[in-house]
Amino acid sequence: MDMNGSFNYMNSFLVQESIALMFVALGLAIIGMGYAKLKTKETLHLHRWVMSGAIILTLIAIFFVMFPSLFIYYTTPNDGIFSGFSILQIVHVAEGFPAVVLTLMYLFNDLPKPTKKWMQLTAALWITSIALGAVVYYTMPS
Image (cartoon, rainbow, N blue to C red; front, side):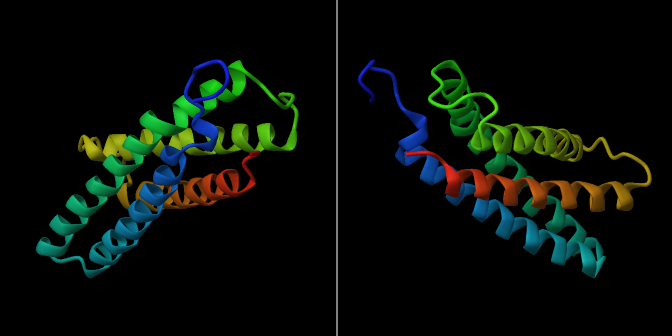
């Protein structure tokens, strides 16, 4: 808790757990991509389950840590909206949003066509978003 009595997500244990969840999700995604490359009925089924787990872990991190952190950061700003850290967060959100939307489409079996190209784009966006999120985490003001 900070001096105002509100929970400070920017310096909390939950932020550390969030980055850990994202690295686990990334590991699952890499395993899932490996299953997809094998292209058998069984491995494609495993691909779907492993990737669904990665998506769910990502959503947990987003809703329980990232959104609250972003809200707290911009409602009680220490830096200006045009600070380097703020711009980095905005880029992370702008780049990550389409990745989340696309992964949710896959989670609910709404596959865009051509599916393989869209999955490759989603994977690129998702991995870039995780990399940007790691930069946000490691440059977070204390």
